[in-house]
Image (cartoon, rainbow, N blue to C red; front, side, top):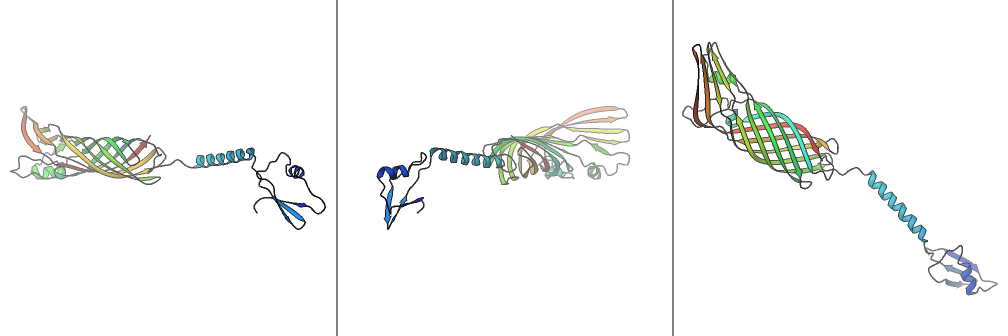
Length: 302
């Protein structure tokens, strides 16, 4: 049996019911069940199922509750891909390199008969972006991103194609600037506590400022300024996020930014020994623009 057993010698005496009650009621203890007497030969053994005092039950509850609280407090904060679970607001800043693609990155003249397109002669340059996002869940959110690309103009290639006999002069140029103002959904896919994969698809406004060219030879100089334009732009990208703390992480991203700005006018100023003149020419020149942006940055989650 699993309960206490008490032995009583009945060889020489018989106990009354009152005496039995007195025998099994000690120090205020109480027993649930009536006494069960089993007589075997000269002994009687009695099975008693004691009831746990209320104080013991309360003490047991307090001990279990205290242990549970301690285990919960000792458990590290739950993370989802490098950030504390529940963080909804995401802010990031990144910078890196932008590799020109399409006509934007083509270092050659368009065909002589092509009067509706232009090339950018762009070189690999600098890229930056700032984004703010909101996570609707651990996996899906929306973001807005502002970015910029500054790509130099390949004057060496330009002169070799357009001014090969210029012995006393050369072309200088400012950088192209491509701006982007985009918004759209993103996916956050936690792989472990400190690592997540991110995917985004954004669309919005692209702005394009073509490089300003200055050609010189002897006393002659000419400056070409193409008017800036804006058009539809889009961005598709993916990256990884590596958690540093519960609220901060590193981000490594690769994006493709695309659009087709259409330039519509150019202002040319010519300076000579006898004076200068300025003329504006209207045209329609489209430039397919693609940029592969590779960047690294910091992401904060609140």
